[in-house]
Image (cartoon, rainbow, N blue to C red):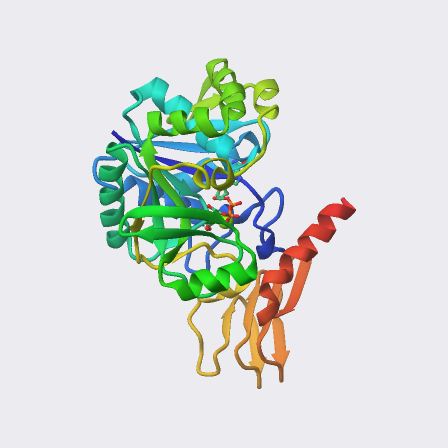
Length: 351
Ligand code: GDD
Ligand code: MG
């Protein structure tokens, strides 16, 4: 069995003001329709032989998630929502899925972890990579998917490879190190998707982060089972789960584990990490402007404008991001798109 596991949590602070604490990145309406999480669900269901999907998310997002899935119902696909009472980052989310899967399908179940907020343009290439990854996973590897790096991005993990073998995994290096990796020709970006046997991940966690399993196991064992529409829900126990250390899988397992493999994939992957990436989804006019909504441009070049309710006019400006929503307006230089997260952080600090 190959079971896709969609992990969804975290606000996506670089896409403020569309991404909010209670309306995070996976649920943003894409310029060309649908949501990132809805597309992830369909992409997962389209993998050969997949009948079951697992979604790990906060209980607060059950309804939003179910709505996104219902927009794109996939006949014959069963889904189980593993509901977290609080976010404890990705190691805990993956532990949850692994414990659940081992119980439901046994240690040999192959899990494919998919972040809910990524875009894949070429699904055929994605599926070929998944099928190779599943093979390697069956032989006991924890498999990563490598993306050819385009810049010295410090927000990603880097995978140093020798063929399909991973020599080293480094999560979010500093800029100088990222530059070195970019130049080396031996490093891939970590896409954030992973493939492994449930038993392999449980074994790795028992070795490298036993305190996570220690809390997650009873949280799952005592979970409250229910249904939501056609799908099953398992809400894990707050007391146990809240005590789980909050750390990402990348730091907790991937930087330490030994039997890691990497399948390179060029499938038009993007983590839509900023407004600059979101803008790319909209076709540009002759002056390089991209706009959604009611927008009038006069002598403007290379701008991205997103307007939801109001008419927006731009005159004589270039390289700007203008994001207008009913209760917040963002104006930013395009090359500062990454810094939008500071606005989000300041608002959060102010409560
Ligand atoms: N269920 C659940 N619970 N999901 C979570 C939680 C949580 O507490 N925290 C994060 N997630 C989900 C996010 O919604 C996202 O889909 C995925 O897990 C990865 O989390 P991010 O917070 O977006 O991680 P990142 O982008 O900083 O880094 C990861 O992805 C990069 C590629 O985009 C790492 O794997 C990097 O190595 C990788 O390069
Ligand atoms: Mg991310």
